Length: 585
Image (tube, rainbow, N blue to C red; front, top):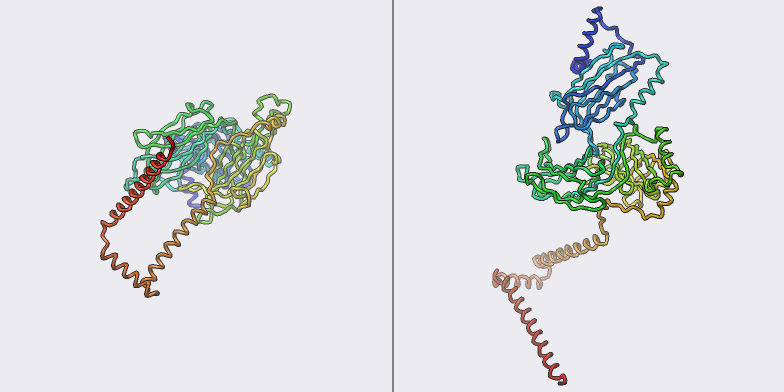
């Protein structure tokens, strides 16, 4: 209770000031009567804006959004304001509260697509001290429990509490469900216009950032809201990454790919090495370009392969942003792919929506007996990735992937990996599902298989998929060759070549072992005759051998070969003369 009171005094100082002003204005001088904690209340919140929020991106900005939680359950998530430390949301929230003793927990995050979102601060709003039907302006100072003295900015809200009867419960439940849905226009995921496939090969002549004259470099890629990071190569100025990244292109004409190189430092802030930019609008599509990009101020060079593949719309979102769950949206999509509309855009065959819910009993890839699993969903050249759930064998992703389908005979591939910060991800399992085998809105558990899909591996993944397509377009598409997959496959190891190399190394090792055993037997006098001969050879060799004899013997070998070649040439000339004499004139 004492700890809670301290937090209350820190986080709700401004709220308490408002309470005191309201009491004095009423002129009663008394205290607010305590509210029954077991009744049902409606809490209306207006999330107005943030002030001087923390910087989490290299550009000196952040992409903040806000989460509300009550009793550990998320009840609201705001929209994302890109590149702004003083965001203005102006979003209204209607929440149901059954227990005023549970505070409202408010957390702010910086959105990072493909990476774990960065924490920007949190605050508590205690509800048992609110007044009924009185709008209150609240300013909450954000704090980090690990760095309590750090200034992380503040949030401004307007809070109003109402008491409701049990008859209003159903209406309030519907209002709260509307808040939880993130399907507003500004919160729907953007649709991709293509895929930028980047094969990061190597770095050359990077500048040293550590005291040993080396660096631990890694690379960050940023394309619009998308951010990806490579693995770290320790202690080198010429790193070899050999990694591939697939970024979704949202601009129809291209975009600017921002590339930065960093030096990894444990226990302190990473050092910035250099940066460069690549204008994707100047590159041809469906063609692989080898780029050698100089970092600014001559800080080194990056070598990478870039391929722009024209693809149809793809998206990734939370479960609450699910078009097919909305009856109106579902009817619109079914109408769009009606057989009567087969003559509109023959390449737009249909859509595939897959919900990646969770996995159970995955393989332990780390020494701690846990894994850091994430999923990759692939449909032809479309490739989407979930976030990583750390230190668990039973992750929950709850992500919805939407693909536009070109061929009904395509196969949807879901692969589970374990994230490793210092090296490439470990394979945990894979499933391949032909689109024709999918039953709409059926949640199903799939046993994970190995890379070749020839046998099971450990773990089960739970998926739910929907396929809506135009039957006429799909039939016509059958006569068209399948789409070429531009993403480079992993290099496969030849078992036959590996066996040959192993046998060759084995023969060399056995030969050396036999030679060593023979020499050792000479010293053990197992055969007196052999040991005596070895002793005499040793004495003669040490007595007569000099270092200059090594190059002299090589020179004599060269002279002998020269003599043999000269003899063969003379014999050849004699044979030719004899043939000339014997030939008729």
